[in-house]
Image (cartoon, rainbow, N blue to C red; front, side, top):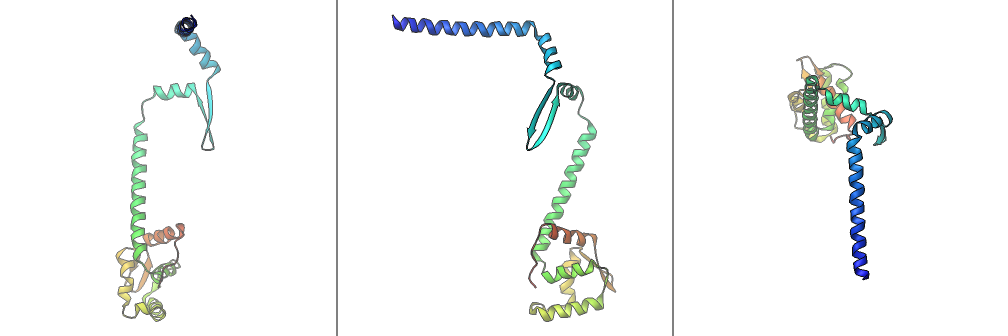
Length: 185
């Protein structure tokens, strides 16, 4: 008898819950416009915090954003931003490659050139001092020393003087922003 009572109790409980859900659903369906109006008037703002930044969202803003078409100018801006990002990444990759093969004394020449043009005679003195200080350069010519800087368009040789390029300045800024250590030689 107790098993039957438990079974009846479970079935009755289930039927009661189903009836409650049906009644609530019927009320919502019947008064959906009034409920929507009430929510729009009284619960029109949602505030939340994501990653420490507060956001406020209103039903009105949501409704307006859904009624507007996606702006084509936004698409163009997205494409421009992607192009900028791609160019930046390509530039950074190139700077990483250059940094992996450049010597510290060549970076020092770039730093000296930020103060202004350097006459080739002044560069010869700098190179002679560098080759004396670092025996690695004993067999190098001035042209070999400058080759990486000129080929990678960090420096321009105007036959009378050396001048750093915009790319050379960008390269120096890049290694400074990334806190790269001084290179050997």
